[in-house]
Amino acid sequence: MVINQKTFDAKIHELLLSIRDEKLSVDMEDNDSLRFLKECADRGYVTGVKLRLDIEGSYMGNLPNPKITREGLIFLERKRNAIIEYSRKNLIAFLALLVAVGALIVSIISITQ
Image 1 (cartoon, helix red, strand yellow):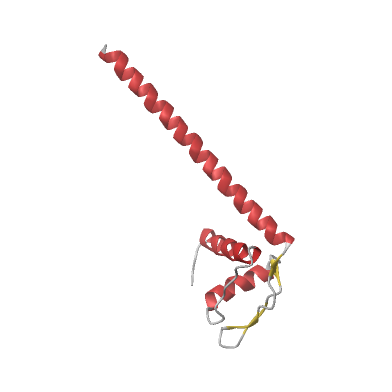
Image 2 (cartoon, rainbow, N blue to C red):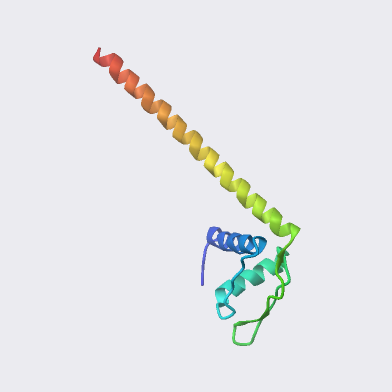
């Protein structure tokens, strides 16, 4: 499966949140989910994940007690800050649009009088 970086990070983010909230539910037959979980472990975002790729390209192993690490928490914090910054910029743009529409209405009213 080919995906872009944004989708990849979103899947990692989703997995880390489920581990943090102790709601991880992974089907051991779902190779894509296991690939993302292995990526989290390889990046040092989680511990307690023991997965390996077999000769057929499927992941094998177990998840005895996955826990999020400090690096995983930092990843989540960066993602949260990026979402907040994006929301702030959109709010500022929306407020600017409202001011512009208000100025347009005032201009139209002043011209018609």
